[in-house]
Length: 213
Ligand code: GRF
Image 1 (spheres, rainbow, N blue to C red):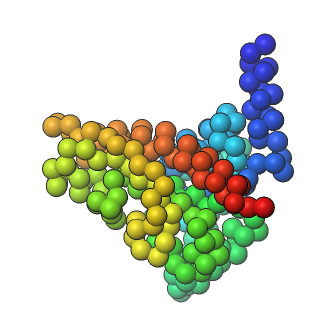
Image 2 (image 1 turned 180 degrees about the vertical axis):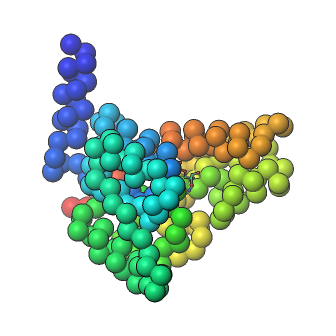
Image 3 (image 1 turned 60 degrees about the vertical axis):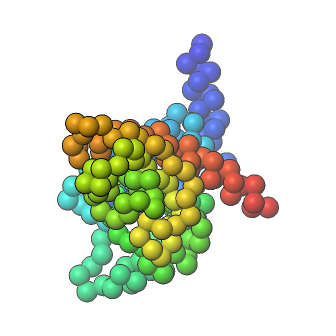
């Protein structure tokens, strides 16, 4: 009985045409993407993921995961001769066809340039594995260990033209333990990321809905 109720509730929350749409951008294994898609399936993140895009094929296990979960997923790679801006223009055109409320970067490794930022102002979010503004950029967990901080964590922020500089939406704190390696610390932070990202996306979608007439 309960499972029928859960199923109906989940279906009701996800009914087509009612939920805001998101597009997820990835470059790699996509564990954050998977956590978001699972919450959508459970009806706890009240959104429809109309498309997952990866800019990489090699190592982008996330594409296969998204397809296996029944979501549409495409590989869109930068061509050698293409400038960053030209690629982002092509990417933005493709994303616009989905008419998303929000673009969610989940381990997407390219820095977004003007054509993407202009196409989706205040509508692109990213997750970073440190307490920004500390340790922006690559290997944030190693930066935290090298510095010797006792707590670190993850940050969800709006994307602007800088590297991990946009307005902060939420942060999760994670302890650094004496025996931590980059791997053990990364794993602990990732767990916090998976729990914080969908909640923050949900809240931000609600804020957008309240502002949109
Ligand atoms: C995460 O640590 C995220 O914070 C960073 O890239 C990593 C992506 O991991 N931006 P995954 O692909 O979601 O597993």
